[in-house]
Image: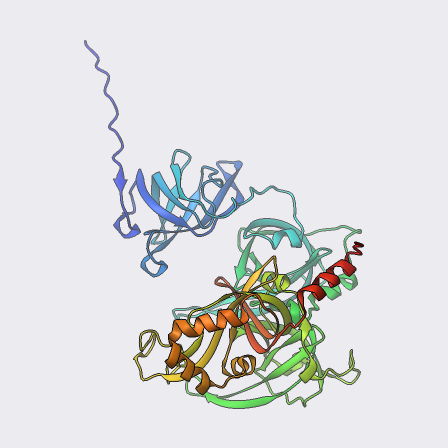
Length: 505
């Protein structure tokens, strides 16, 4: 009998551009994707511990994000070097997984990953060793921690589809390196002060703030270490100043001085009448807004101690929020001498402004290195105040615009730079010209002529800026309340540097 070797059929490659083209049983898939996140963790596979990673990828990576679809993926091949967040890659030999009617992509050990566009730094591979809270806060991903439970309270999250709500626990953990908020999707019945060993938690950013997520796969047990910082030692971990506020922070403790206070009524989406109270508050490090969804009525100059408060953004800057009057204590013994709001500007160098969070009530310095061509007369939408482009608003379409005055510069301190925006009042004060005079000059010389006039007048001039900063994915922007030109001569500036460095000629 003659035996013939039969070759196994070659796997058919399925090359697609969109996730919507994939079926639940597809194998040997080739697709280009954008890597959104990469979170490694240790998982038991067939009785052995293996490092795998989870994350998000998006199809159609060369188009705008609103034209993409996002799927989960799992990396079985330890491809962290090639799957850095922000990169665009081609996957060859991937497969589709379906669980509970939800599809995801498997990056298998045999999958070829080709980097088409570099992303950020590769995510560090994890180990079983616990890390400090400071280290855990630096990157998203799975971590092991030993930390003391500072606070916890039950909460609910309403499902986006309105089908119900989820019971969760929120609170805060601390060690000697710092503190961090947590969100537990499973019951957590330990008392504040308990030292816990937490394995397999994940770090996720909520808005701008890292947060520990505890799920059903997270292992938590009481830990004993007599050398670990006590509850009293860690009690300061929740106390912050206004300059340290970041979007998404929760369960924080802070003391503020009230600058102004007001209240207004509005009709909510369900038709009920609600009252919100808010005002400006300050401390030695800066100023911000305070919003109260409860009945409190402080007076100007009062000192308030807030506990369990949270932070959300309001007009691009941190806004303190309290939900219960029990969170607010009116202090009879002020922790500092009363601050004059009119004179309260906190000096911050430009590099610190750029590398920290959004802040109000700051003063910084820089040199004008660029004048934007669109400085001068602009037109705003009468409905929303957005700047019109070619006579149209992005939200309200073609409009008869309302004229306004605006100046836009870029300032630099030799290390960092930021956009600087002056609205009408600071622009008029800075130029020594009112809006009508600027309009006449623009009509006479044209927009380019006015920009050339500005460059000749202010380029390379050093400024002192008072106002607020907005720091986001677009970069750093300063919104000026007041701007002053530094009249220091070059000779005086050189002498100041020589004196500072004790240079003798």
